[in-house]
Image (cartoon, rainbow, N blue to C red; front, side):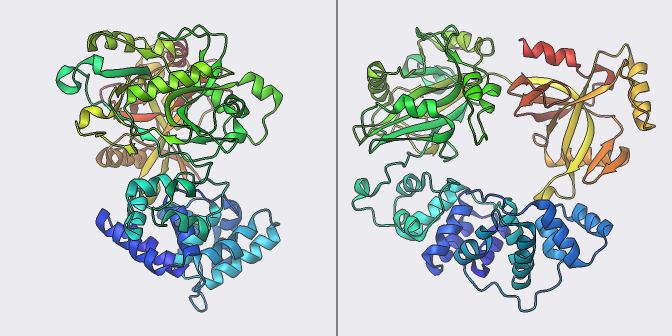
Length: 581
């Protein structure tokens, strides 16, 4: 654990990509393979499942520290991170131990805590804390609490592994696909396969392994011939709101992977049945969507059926058991984008138009049918812009643009081929929906924002105020802690947001929050309503879990509306109108 702790500290302290890669390579040269397997799993984005409840960790730390509860809570609020707070308040260890490696800690000490009773967990946690130094305790709490994060990207980890092994980073990226899936425990053998010499690559591949996903860049401006060349050089498709995935059919079995490298076969049995009869050695890239089989087809398609709202698909995400009712009420489908492998042959280097032709041929022979993403043809960019303008009406997010000669790359790149940027993939999304909300609650952020209030809850009016005076009367009632009049004007919370503003803007809002705080509820402050903030979001759906009756998709802050008075903020009726838009 000490070696892993030292690596974590070095990565956390540096902003230099070169320094981080160098630190990772040094670690890989020194660490045993079984430790490197776990370290690369976590650093590449593997999510440790929560082994100990946060409430129990807090209670054990409070007991071990001997602090009064109020002082522990004040310390937590000042630090902003529970693991860091615990590491700071615990008494010094007897020997500053933790000499055993990361693999031993995970398999012998941490993983056995899963499912153990509270007494066993309490004893084990105290023993672990007694062995570890402050940094080790911090990492321990992060790992057993399921909250481990560090400032390195998966791409950087792959680059370091490639440098360590003397391999092409693209090969390492391909080998690491699926490595961070939570259903698989990282092993020394799995790690050695990632950094093994490149000889015999095809034979060594795990049959379940998907390919690294090719990701699109967002267009910064409207496309035209000067920026992207003729529209006829591009294949345009609708951009769907679902889960990007790959279906792998090899060795007589089917695996369904998400873009986040999570194995999701058991969550989508419809997709397993869809691919069961595909020819062996077939890998298809596409979008997992909620599927409305009776809806009219989208423009560009002649087949009945189209994707449903993402909120429907959410009913399937995270469920351990799929009842017949859930399968009936939230059916899933798959829209194919690309054919990556056919008959065991990797097709990614072929041009887009050739892969598309092969995909359509496969789809035409499939039983049950394999829906392909409709292609939209247009003589020029203006015509495509007109079709994109209908996106929200059709329930899609805009258009995807793929150059007809582009290969299938790795990750989010701007170049794919010798011709340069024009061969990349681009997403041409529609403008987000917006609403003006009133800030009513705030909570401090995490990490470098732990001392600044950055996580906000917003409200809208239950109806439009008659004038500024009526709105001000509600503010005064809130300030005086008087209950809201159920028959009168009131503010109704509807969403949370914590991103979108600059550091300077967050500091300015933080100052207002501290000046207008009314009450503290643990880490949360209620504030006197004074600020209107413009929020952007990708979609809206009905929700029984929210007081407002709606839920926003990807809400974020655009700007503080210093020009807008409180009584001009949006209303529930405005949100209802967006639902039907």
